[in-house]
Structures are given as C-alpha cells and as structure tokens.
Length: 283
Image (cartoon, rainbow, N blue to C red; front, side, top):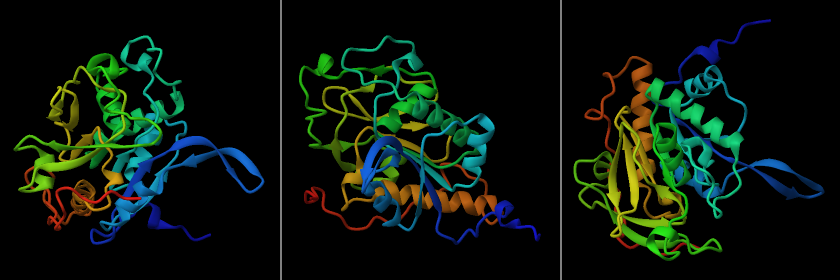
C-alpha cells in the first residue's frame, strides 16, 4: 500500500488557512435522533470563511498534551468559542449559586489546546468563554456573577438578547492595530462572568466604564487576542477575524520557510474594509 506523505507536509503558504474552532457537546434532535452532538452556531463558521479562512470544528474530546500538540500541528490558527461557565475548581473557588454546571470535558480539552497553542506559537483568538479559559489556564481568576459587582444584568440580558455597547481598546495594543484608526468595536455582550485577577503574561487592553475587562492579549504569542464580547455576531465588522486569518497566513509561511521569524512587529496587518461605526442589527 502506497504511503501518503500529505499528513506530514505543511500546506502551501498561499492556501486558505485552517482555523480550528472549539465547540460544545449538547443534546440535539434531528429527525428520529436525540443524541449528544458537536454543536457550534453557524455565525462562528461564517466569521472565518467570510475573511478567507477554512473553519474546522473541534468537539470536546480527551486530549493529552501529545494529542493537543497533534491537533495544533494541523492548524494555522485557533478560536476558543463562547459557551458554558468555566469550572471554578480550576481557579480554586467554590461554585457560586448562579455558576452553571461544570463542563469538565470541554474545560480540559480547551486548556490542553491553549498550552499547545502557546508552545507552538499558534495564532489564537478567544471569544467570551474563550477569554476566560485563557486567563484561568494561565493562573488568573474570574468574577463568577457580574450582577453581584455591578448591580444589574446589563452584561447578560438573557433570552439570547445581546446588549450592544461601544468598546474602545488601548492604543498600542494588537487589537488597536486590527481596528485601525477607529479603535472602537461594537461589542455584543452576553456574559454574566468576567475576568477578575489577570494571569501572569496576560495584558488587559480594554475595560468598560465600570471597570469590567473586555479584552486581553497574551504576551507570549505574536497573535494572542481574546475578547469578552461576541464579534461573530457582527457580520458588518470582521476586523478581528481578518486579523486572525492574516496572522494564520504568516504562521503557515513561517512553517514553510518562506517568511521571517514571527514577532508581533512583523505580523501582517489586514487592510481595514469600510464599515459603519454603528452597524445595523442583524436578524
């Protein structure tokens, strides 16, 4: 039987980057079936493909460090998607009465991917829960229920309704580079938890008026960005995803030997398409 060398051959630096997107395991119904299945809202997939990437869905599964490295080795970029609360046992706290039931399989899987991504210097984008996973995995903590701190449900209105506010990121940050001269992002908020104590090696790059951290960056990665809001919900502003895909192209070019070593200073910054500061609400 002839061997297949494609598994060990890096894809062309000019090919569309492969972006892994973590997913949920949820009970799902289709036809006569009522089973656990990998679940991810389509908006995540569209956000990747709209800017020239290829989305690869990654369901929670057992992952030793070696398995996590094997997954990361086949990707050009990684998105940690939103979802259920991180198990507070992972940051040494008892569960708040409003903290959701732990999804230990997903916590462990994504924690292993974070470690492998940092080791490989893989471009990484965290979204909502994803930002919290990164901070916890690197030694930080979370506020388990924001209404206890801010006094109301402004960060998570409930019933799937996103509360939209404008977030301005710090000048000189990687996110500021992605947003261009307009450092404002229209943030779709749906989180009842937030970052409390920052992990070592993590920098906060934006906060709300009442001090809630809304974006962080990883010092150890050329492209390591995480936001507490849901940029995938805004179809008219793909700047963060375009930045990830551009970084993924640079990463692949570096692996194939056609580019200089990666640093935050020589990553490609995508062109900034025209977009409204206050985009229309999407159905």
